Image 1 (cartoon, rainbow, N blue to C red):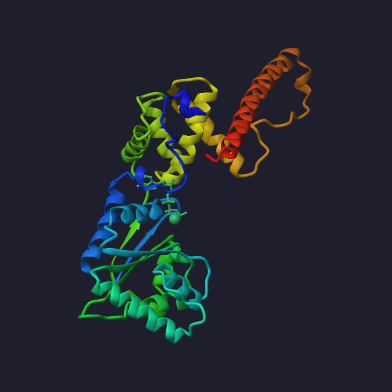
Image 2 (cartoon, protein in one colour; image 1 turned 180 degrees about the vertical axis):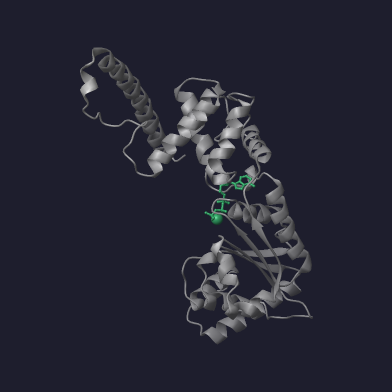
Length: 326
Ligand SMILES: Nc1ncnc2c1ncn2[C@@H]1O[C@H](COP(=O)(O)OP(=O)(O)OP(=O)(O)O)[C@@H](O)[C@H]1O
Ligand SMILES: [Mg+2]
């Protein structure tokens, strides 16, 4: 909808991670350097933690898009609360190993021989575990065991673990001392600074042919950073709604007020609140008999109704957008 209005070739602020939109902010670039360092070391574990929505999955996507499939066999694991045994089987199936009907011992043997033959064929195996905060200690131990396979004094498998901040607490548990000793490097992916938040927004917009339409005022960028704390997913949802707002208002400028209003609406929606634009039911008071006061209140109510009307229009447009699969 808004894409046509602003002459864009696509939607710039999708919530699904997409490596084509990767923006190498200083935090993402440091996280990437850790992953690349790990690859060069060709052993052990690399741990990346990061705030919710900070870009961990996007980072993994981007890394995968840069690796030569002739040289790397990549298994990506999105962990849910699975048992240790299931974790092992999930990792195996990520490498195309069929574990049906095998005992754990047989599976481990098959796992090792598969990794070794890949290695001998010149392909390193890389296990990327996303949402690692969902792993139990026993599951993490299973993954550690896999790092014990050795061929020609080298490990044919390397693992990268990515998780939300609570994963750091898990990693600090005394039972995981052996794993900690195998961690080559770890990094915490934090939010982007104000200047990079702006550059991130402009980067995503440019990738869909943005030519300063809509024009974002400086104060709007600053406000977006304040409202989102520099977290990419929050920036995407706010900006996506801002663009929709601009389209519905038929404006080609995004100012600070618009950012504040849209952020407010998002907060109200997400909190499930019924307060629309700050409207509160009238409280009886003696002063209400005053005609001028009643008139002023009526005008205010009309304004609020008008605003609510617009909010409903926007809400309907959002629903329509979701139904269209955007
Ligand atoms: N460096 C980046 N460049 C471009 N877009 C990014 C970047 N980092 C994150 N994003 C965008 O932000 C959103 C959230 O990113 P992502 O899903 O990777 O976060 P996450 O850290 O994996 O979140 P969670 O903790 O919920 O798993 C996605 O829409 C993604 O496209
Ligand atoms: Mg993720």
